[in-house]
Length: 424
Image (cartoon, rainbow, N blue to C red; front, side, top):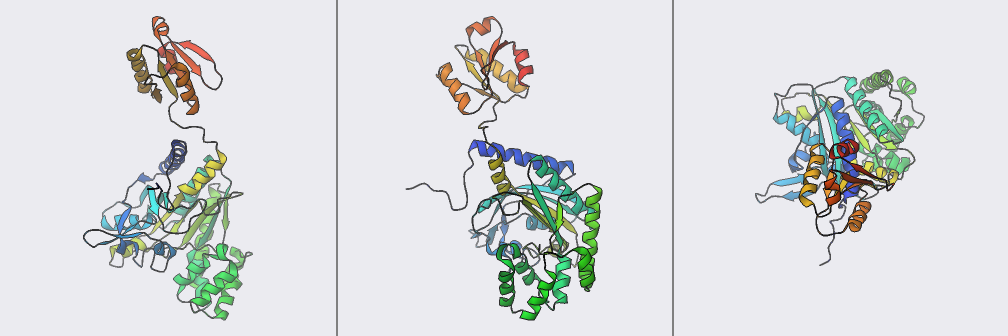
């Protein structure tokens, strides 16, 4: 039997997992800095939840790429393709939650779709959502958070923003009433171009006159002032006003990496207002590295009774971020250990010193087995452990430890107390 991974999934060796942990920790720290609390939801959902018309929608690409399965009770299940639907279900099941609710989730999601750089079939996302607030300040803070993370990771990036209400207004003004299907086509403009979108709209039974009229709005030169003169639809006007308010808040808090993109729609059907996507500049990673938007109807629809629960969220794509990190980093760290303790005929004493280092928060590996000093030095060098602490009978007589810095070869005789200070 030839051992193979399932298509679209992969193992992460220690050096990649260490780098991934750094990315996740950076994002988690930013989430909590902005007041988001951790939440965990299962990767396995009832298929009816994932397919709900007020969720992704049956016409969305996300649902078409859902991994479906059936349990032994013949219940139809699916692996989550993102976390927003799971959050909406959680809030709907817990109607007494205090609002606004600010939570974040980090974990695996799954899509049975095409594979490319930065896009696997199992990938991690990190989501932050604010539920129960209609204020554009929520969007502004999430975009600011997003920018802080990418600056911390030393990325060159751009954040594109739009408002679904603007697109809805344009489509209605062009005589297109089934806006959900049309938006899915428009969202592919960057991928399949004007001709591809026009063809997809025609396949959805829209006339050439309607399609041509849509493209009088969807131009690269479209600006908010120019659209104000052209858009007459009330929903479209509301979308323009919300976007202007958001851009005003971003200016107030000093966020400069944002640009307006009228073609940005986001594929999921549940978005109702502001939509957001972030892209890397000058990178082979061409897919978005973060995205999100406002979804004011999904949670209320899950709850029933005509309720409307406003919500907005962003999601970081850990896989494409990791691809960029690997290009920027040599990934030299293969273990979290900062020091390798090597005993020479004094195992018990060396174990006590190793434990003392660990008690002081120093990640410590211990050379067990019968390898000699040279083999253990080679081991430390291979794993890029920065220090080794050699402890033999001579060192014990002097109540010292021989500390060797692997990069320079420098050696010092230190007391355990001084060893702790040095490694801290």
